Each structure stands twice: as C-alpha cells, then as structure tokens.
Length: 232
Image (cartoon, rainbow, N blue to C red):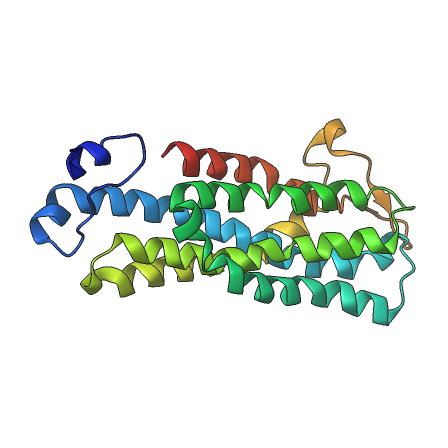
C-alpha cells in the first residue's frame, strides 16, 4: 500500500497534511504554507487590479472618441462588479475540485484575457459596444478570484494561524485596488511599451493617451505569477 509520505513526494500533490500537528508544522508544514501564501498574495493583488481597472478605462472612453451615453457608460462600469460577485459563488467551490495549484494557475492566467482584450479594444475606434460589455464581464474574473484564493489559503494553516494568514492574503490582495489607482493614471500618459504597445489616442483637447496601457501593464506580471503558481 502506498503511504501518505510517498504520495506527498509525488510532484505537487500533498498526500500528508497535518497543519495542527505541531511537529509536522514546524518541520514541514510552515515552509509549504508560507510559500503558497506569498505566491497567492500577488496573484490576488493582480486580480483586484484587473477587476477594478475597468472603472478607469470607462471614464476615459469619451475622451478618446467613444460616444456612449451616460446610461451605456454606467452599465460598462457596473458589469465587472456584477460578474465578480456572481463568480465568487462558483469560485469558492473550485479549489476542492481542481486543486489549489491548478486553480490558482488557471484563475490567474484567465486575467490575461480581459487585460489583453482591453489593450486591443480601446485602440480601435470601431470596437462595438457589445465587445466592451464582454470585456467588462470578463474583468469580473478578478472579483471571483477572491473567493477561491481565500479558500485555498485557509487549507494550509492551522486553526491558530488561519486568521493571520487570511488577513495577509485579503489585506495585501485588496491593495491591488490602490496599486491600480496609482499605476494606471501614470502609464496611460506615456508609451510605456514603445512601438509594440500601439499608437496613442488623441483626446478632444489635443493631448494624447495610451489607454491600452491600462490593460497591457498587467500582462508581464500576470505571466510571472501564473508561472509561479504552477511551478512553485
């Protein structure tokens, strides 16, 4: 019969996990739990950044020539919140089904879809409204990630340490909102990615904005954290 210790040594599968056993925690558990926590935090931070970035993009669309009504802009701003809240219901069950490593990898990689989609869509003045609605809904992936991230991290820590670990995960992850609000207004004013980032959009007052950077800026970080989630 295969022992738990043997199973535990197979790749990234934890066959023996007893965080409330003090000896196990001190000799093996703490290192594994800490590594997962410090990978989870930047994944969640980026999830919040992508989830909320749409609010900045929507506010800038009229400035670069998209003539949407106030009602249409309202729905574009509201959809990420609606989809994110709905997805949390389902995401909270994903870790037991897929496993924490696979689901953290998939859920982080999924954020590349709205990030890249925003970057390309805002550069085309003929992008239809329905495509912006789809992108707004896809930004909700970031909101859903909160539920699965918390469920995943809760598994790793003993009862006495769960509160601290979850507070770090949630608190530093939520910092993604502040990071986004600081970073995006800066990167949309310059050609951060040079020629590969696309041409700037002219504004009504004669200025230039690189709105695509609001999406593209997260791509390299999402790739790094996706790889970290899978390999570490």
